[in-house]
Length: 362
View 1 (cartoon, rainbow, N blue to C red):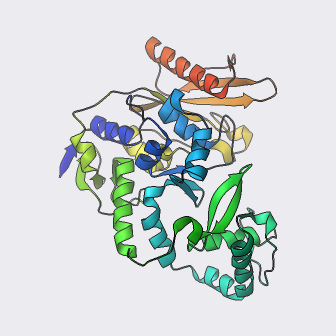
View 2 (view 1 turned 30 degrees about the vertical axis):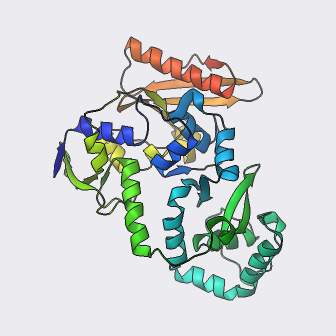
View 3 (view 1 turned 45 degrees about the vertical axis):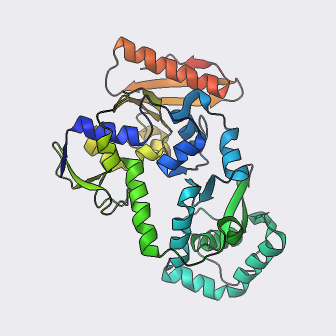
């Protein structure tokens, strides 16, 4: 049983997410460590996937590097709205092809057996294709209770078939997914990896990406990977990556990092509160009158503490990055304020625009 102080636990979490002073060198190194990078269409400053790489690599990162890694070098691949390191592909594909769908999804596929066959045949003959290039020959439609879909059933069928490893996203065109047969991206299934073996290895990789995680958290899904740990002042049962424990004595120190609200570091809100005393609420879906900090604020990490929230937006017409406010959750000293301002200006330079600080900044 490892016994950790809160400072040690936070340092482990920060370093596992490549947010310490020792910056990674390229896109593949980031993907291999983090495992997955969220893709999201909300863009106030830059897309979530692009910001995730910039927050870690800094000046050495250019957006074209991600596209090259995914589409040309095949070192990353897209699945379920995230980019994954290709080293995870064999285990993830084993789980896809062993997945048991819910009853409603099975019934949908059975009722639309001919539609499913049409989609696969079209991709086999013509693929890769956009969803809009595939005819909707469905017989039964899924309800649209979530409001995320239109009446066209092709996107739904493609997403369902991707979950069970029959189709895959091979690239994007203007953020639209381009689909093909999964076997062309993943290769044939030789049955050499069992679902149990795959899940055990993936749990280890998830813990490696988190550094430290609650044993039974649905967000981390680490199971019994790693080793047990206790954290000072916490009643939780933790699992910790042995490599992270071994590296505690070799600490490169912290830095300032500006994170997209959909950054992997922020997914587990309970862990943020337990380890970092940081209650992060995304106000994107709140009515404007109920927002305290802003529509899509970016948390600012200083060392191992979330010290501020940045409310900013890229003004494409005026070609400025307008910073409406920097909300200091932990008051800055002069050095911290200079470091944060420098990181914001670096963000503007990366975007290729000047930074304008609004008068309402605090």
